[in-house]
Length: 514
Image 1 (spheres, helix red, strand yellow):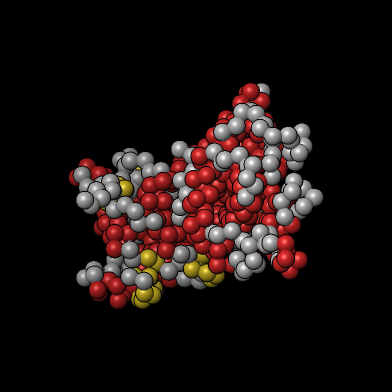
Image 2 (image 1 turned 90 degrees about the vertical axis):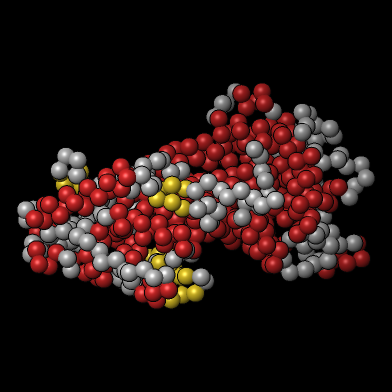
């Protein structure tokens, strides 16, 4: 029996969620463009209205004028058709790493959703081709650096515009090749971008928004994983489960904080201590874990609102109101909401790294781990003196945490005046989004280290014949972890296991809390 084909993500008038973008980015769902004639006519009216204005020789920014500070420069009608190609050509100056395949799909999805509002003056043929790029997985090679996040993600999005026109390079079927070659293979004619179409593609927040969707999804899973790691560490350190009592948290009713405490109670399945306590109050990284993780949990709703509102907006300039025959000049390309969301996420995620790093420090230190071996080594007495267990892993986690904490500096306050002081206050939203992904990468590394160490700590406790059986959620987790990460008895290089653990984290491999 084969699995049913998943429902497609429809790009049109409907609201898209972060999860929709994630599904498209991971190629788990088909992609379709809304097909009804009313929608297609709505899109067409914008382009037709622009043509009418051109016939009247109306003044339209970026169509009959130069770009940015050059908006005072008139473009004669016989040059209007050439202007879009010049826009994506002179912006072909991106540097840095290329966005990976998932990020590129998320960018295409975010830009396509913005254009489906029908307020950008583009043809339906352009939307059809963008949908085809996603369907056939034709991915523009987009350098990640070069956007200040206002006037949109001009430079990185120029690579989308250029490849739609058959220029520059794409990733197709795992190979880097010219966009023109892929057009030939697929029997497509490269688009000759019409007036406003290059501007509509480039003058928006699609790169920062696509990256923000990916960052949000990773942070949401990280929250649950850090909660599960905390529960494992309560067992490994023989901590006090009363720190997570439901009545205690009713006295400070932050919803996310209470949810984290409830998850830990569910994992521990203990209402009261079953053995004498080592300490009446555990150290903060255990006792206050719901309070630390709860800030992230309680912030996710606001971050979702910012990201999904941006995702489902027309965010280029000018806005074309074909119904009322108006051209509205504004600044919807400004990425301030995404910048704030991503700067906030960097702070929230940095605190998760710090929390898990402190838990790992307790695990490896015989002064604080309540009878576990030094550095969690499982070596027998005859070789204990030459084995060092998780000593270097803890050093690595400290390094990754330090970098994540350094990365919490907000990008959005470093606005630069650019482009002859036309773009004199910019959002830095794309830099903030890239920073957030880097912070997540580092924090996932800390989580991988702490998860494997926590599993080792629980295994060491469970060797004691008097140990209490693990509650079902933790026993199941330990079984799954044991398939990939055997106990550390004699020293071995753990890089491969850490990398595998990172793969599991990024694939959301372990089901954590419904």
